[in-house]
Amino acid sequence: MTERGWVNGGRAAVGWGVGYAAFGVGCALSGTALWGARWAGWLVTAVGLAAAAAGWSAAAGWSAARPRSAGWSQDRSARWPTRVLWVLCGLAVLAAWSLLMDVVTLVFGQGVDSVPDAVQKVLAAAGAVLLAGAARSRRGPIAVGAPPAGPSGSAAASAPAVVQLAAWAGTLAFVPYVVMKLVWAFGGSFAGVSGDEVYAGYVHNGSSGIWLTLESWGLDGTVLLAAVGVFLLWGLVRPWGQVFPRWTLPLRGHRVPRWLPLTPALLGAATLAPYGLVGIGYLALCSAGVVGIRRGEFATTAQTLQVAWVGAGAFAGYGVALAVAARWYWRRTGG
Image 1: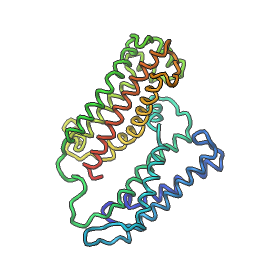
Image 2: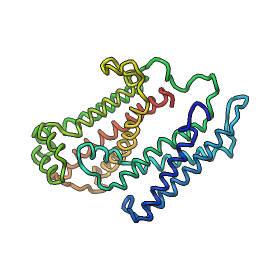
Image 3: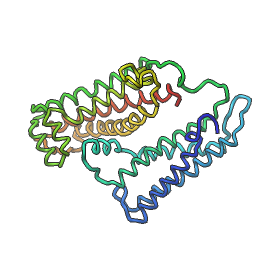
Image 4: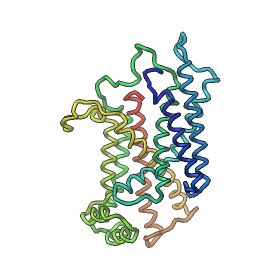
């Protein structure tokens, strides 16, 4: 194994695959439903076993690899584990979708809809990271004495202008959403719905005491999360996201562990970007009259679309920007 370690070498993917398969078997044999279907446990088992096999092959390939005249390369027979690992990584990302929603629910003191589903999402998210690490390691080992892939030992730097432009776009995408939520939180009306009606809806839907207390103080929980999200976004593109700044006191000057911003960034991008983009496509069809939309608590379809466009635009804009920033940070810090 090389400097990339046991995670990138594939052994962690083997361990995750075995654990994920065991979880699937347990759900299937106990009749526990995943995604609303009892047979889905066997699907989880199949993905886990495939990951264990591909990870084992990747680890074995690392051990057998030998440098060549122009550096390490793969023959065709050695490429299939990489492709399988990426396919499984994609499946794990899909399986972990909406985990962010569960995290937000728990943060504000509410329960998740399904504990087994939530556990599955956590396992899938961890698997996506481990499988991606194993797949990337198949590009070849790092030769002894070669420069590192990222500046883990160099000075922190800002992202290129195009990445920072994406960060500005993601930040501004949240402005209409924040304004809408704050209008409601302070008792005003937006899209024909008053703040009192919104609060009554929270009570009717069983929102937690923490959420209701914040609303009574004029603080919307999603606005607070948006502020945290924007802070994360700029941390990915500015030097203080790589080295702790002065205002962090005892941590100042120390390098930020790359997993600290990347974990929420990848989770957020994988959830919000597809949610927002798919939502925009759906709303475009609704606005064109191709399909209908449920009005919910709104009096007219126009009001429903107005609020939905604000939300979808915020999630899509921020989610895409977060994906761009996370990709740059990943590569900058040695990914």
